[in-house]
Structure formats: C-alpha cells, structure tokens
Length: 152
Image 1 (cartoon, rainbow, N blue to C red):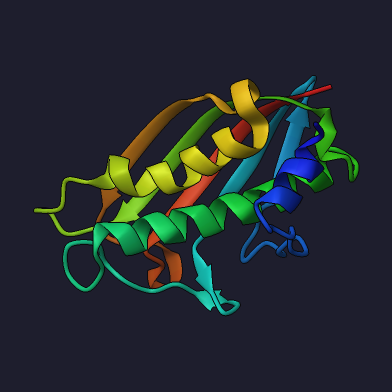
Image 2 (image 1 turned 90 degrees about the horizontal axis):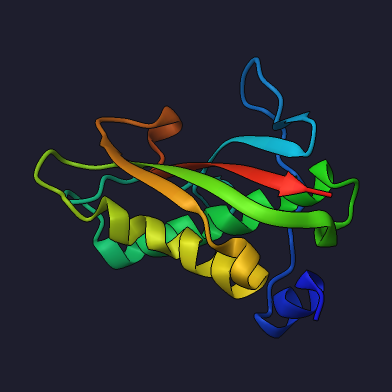
C-alpha cells in the first residue's frame, strides 16, 4: 500500500506547501537526508494561537500537532519531488510546545504528530523525538514541529 493510499484511507488531503515566514527555506537536503524547517500549528489558515496549561488543554494541543504533521508531509512531498513514496524513514521529530511552566504533558501533545506519522508511514514512521515546553512560539502559535527524514 502506498503512502497515498494510507492518506486517502485517513481522509487526509495534503495542502499546498506554505511559504517561509522569514529568512529561511522550508527544507534543505544533504545526501538522502531532508531537514524540514519548523512548521507552526494553523487553524483555518491562521496561526493556531494558545498556551498549553493556560487556555488550551492537552487534547487540543494534540490536534494542533496532528495538523502540523499534515503540513510537514506536504513539505516532505515537495522535498521528494512530488512523490511521498520516496520517503524511507522519518528519522527525528522535534516539537516545541508553547506552555506554562506548570504544564508537563508536552510529550502527549507531540503524540498528535508522532501517531499520525506511524499511521501513514508504518514502520518507516517510527522516529526519534524531542518535545520541549517553551515560553513562546512565533506569532503566538501553540505548537511548532520540525522533522528530519531519509528519502530515496
């Protein structure tokens, strides 16, 4: 089964790739390794603003991380020359969660992305990961995630 079949089964359509918001590129490749820049959570095309532990619950943060994973897959598809089936492995995910100092469920928020990568890529979606709580993310977004992948 191709990754596209899995996306279709999950009723996911990959969006257009976002443009960089500052002086960077959306991805950079060296050899077979692709580094995707951090993607912020968006809701209805705008930054998904909020702070976990203040005005957002873990489950909503998890939904935001899942939405980011969809955007990351769109960028990864672009990095693969339009063919997501070239992905060999999701190697590493790093997640920044805009959260209060008392909030300690960053890892559960990040599961929103990690679980979706597993559903779409299967064994190739199992990855190393870091999840951090931070005081703020650009534009007040609730979550930002970056990704490293191996492609053919």
